[in-house]
Each structure stands twice: as structure tokens, then as C-alpha cells.
Length: 190
Image (tube, rainbow, N blue to C red; front, side, top):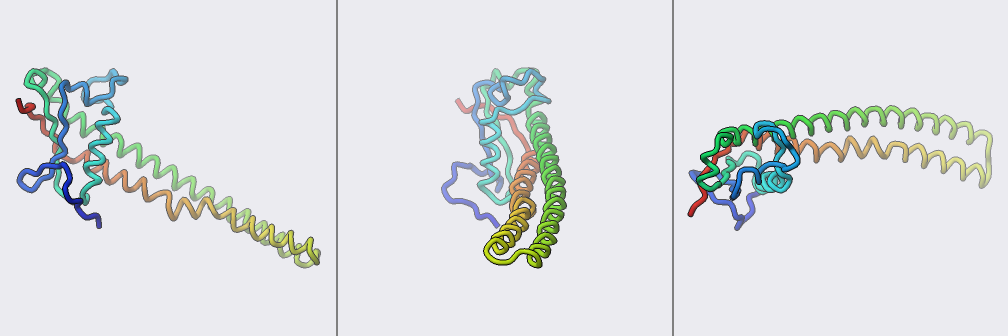
């Protein structure tokens, strides 16, 4: 279980940690390359990284919210009401794409496992044949080579099922938390 780090730059209100972003224009929050309306736009990579980092600094069960500080004229624009939903939509999208990545990784893992098991079985059958036909140094070299190839063929499936899926699951959990967090717009202090 993650412990809260001491001396973090996060303020707290009523027991809720705040991930605060101060902007001069609401457009700074979104990717400048995405022409879609606010509800559907991608977040700026730096803004996304900052929010993800904020969630990673605390246990996932910690109550948090995103507070976006903007100047008063920005808060008066027509599209401003869509910003909280746009942030949640973006993280819902990121969660869905990461879930798809995890599913593809596991599907590839099963395929590579089947291929590796077939190759390993072939190597072990050849090893049995070599043991009865080849003797001496050449036989020993071929036997060792077949054993090594058999076990090395399992490397990728083992890596997939032991290590590669954990980071994606962690990202899914972080994106789910960000998707569900309250997003509040506030006026920048003067």
C-alpha cells in the first residue's frame, strides 16, 4: 500500500487533497493540435502528466479533486461549463484505450505461449532423438543447444504474464480515478 509522501505541494480542503492547475487561458489545458470542441478534446500532455503525477503521489483510495484556476474573463466564456466533463471524458477515453492495450497484450501473451510451448515440445522431442543417435562432444553441444532454445522460447510469454501487464493495470486504475474525480473551476486569486 502506498504511503502519502511528506511535504508535497498539495493543499487540502475538508480532508480532500487538491490537484491545482493555474492557467491564464482555458485553451492551455487542451492539446493545441486537437480542433475538436472542449467536450471531446485531448488534454495537453503536460496537464495530463501533472494530474496523473498528482494521483500517483497518494494511495488510490485518497479523496482528491482537480481544481483549475482561471482569470475571471475566462470563467465567463460560453464553453467553460464543458471543461469539467471534458477532463472526465478524456480520462475515460485514456482508460478505455489502456484497457484495450492490456487486452491486446494478454491476447498476444497467450499466442506467444502456445507458440513457445509448441517450439519447446519440438526441441524436447529432438533432444530425445539426439540423445539416442549422437554421442561425444557434438552430441553434447546439440543437446545443450536444444535445451537452451527450448527454455529461451518461454522468455517472452513468461515476461508478459509475470511483468508486462502490471503497469497497464496501474494506469487503468489511475485513469479510472481521474475519470471519477470532481473537477472544479475557480477564479485565480488576484
